[in-house]
Amino acid sequence: MSTQWLTIKPSDILDSGEQHRLRQRSDMMGFWLLGHCWGVIAAAMALFAMFPNALTFLIAITIIGSRQLGLAILQHEASHGMLFRSRSLNERLGQLIAASPMLISMKSYRIRHMAHHRFTRTEKDPENYLYTPFPVSKSSMARKILRDLTGIVFIRTQIGIFRFLWGDPEGRLDRLKAFYGNTVVFYTIFVVGFALAGRMDLFLLMWVLPMATIQQFFLRIRNIAEHATIPDIENPLKNSRTTLAGPFERMTFAPYFVNFHIEHHMVPFVPCWRLKEVHKIMLAKGFGKEMEIAKGYRDIIRMNAAA
Image (tube, rainbow, N blue to C red):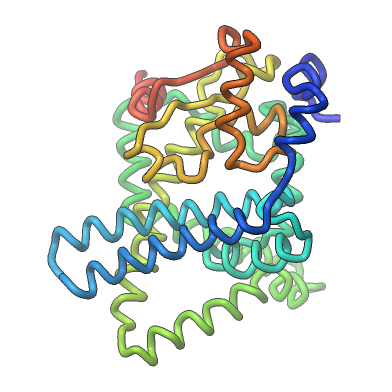
């Protein structure tokens, strides 16, 4: 059982009727979320392609970087089996058009992420390293963000993953195939499409560049917001954080309801698009006074760069 549920259980938050209603998944919503994400990416690329200048370049890579983070969030949703009602669609589309574009193996991610849910912010949490360094000094935070925006973190991360997979010669090819197989299929089709259109420049400037830079920045701040500098590691309402997000923040740091993070940890069987309703229910039932809730992502950065 998850350490999150030792003191508070899902039944303490949602009654049986609410659980039944809110846990319902939808293939139509899954297609809408993926379609929206890729549609916004395509529109941003088209904006720059039709009106190439410095302003549209900055607008496009910002939007695309946010939707690349969105793809990572949607593969997270699929890894929980909640993006689609159909298990087959979750596994196949979640991997091929959400995880693979972001160089993620959903199978490997799921193993690590389920352990994160079970052992949140304990020594057994495999994602603890993302949160324990904070808070840091303002200069340290500035250096981290600079490394994000210059692609250094992205390159280091990809090299680290590859070296880990390369590792022991025994089973090396099987590991590489398992991790990168679907990614190779996706990028073969993706790159050939740009090449046939004669627009490899768009692939490099409007896909590779934002993924290696602006997306890394959005990802860092989102990670910090979820579990860093929390007041009580043992309290499930305080070892995760929900961040109230306005329109700009939902467009950048918090696409697809990822800001409702306490809610996700407490009832991880509820699809992301229903988490806002869970948040309202928790407030109505009096949990709000115990929950770690931030007013915005600017507060998150200030809180974690205060030393």
